[in-house]
Image (cartoon, rainbow, N blue to C red; front, top):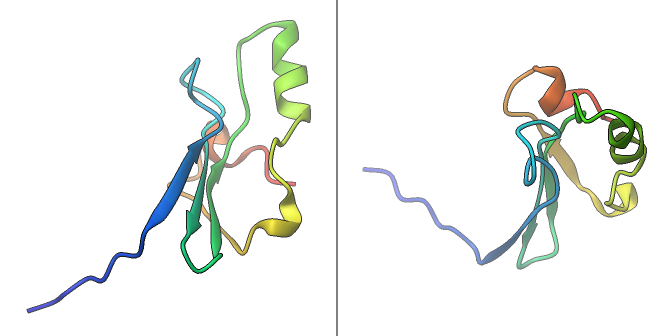
Length: 80
């Protein structure tokens, strides 16, 4: 039998909120450990694509680890 202890965490959805591309999700654990889940490129938004892809909207110095769900460009293409 396995048990999983889950800490309190905060989730921030940064990308893939108004569209299906640009997946970025910040997970902040109670102990201060910060996980970036995916760092995808926005695609197909015309002029807005360049603007959205040039702003990470996260301070990279505060990220402890990046976790990729899979290797599609809309999930990993905007890694700094």
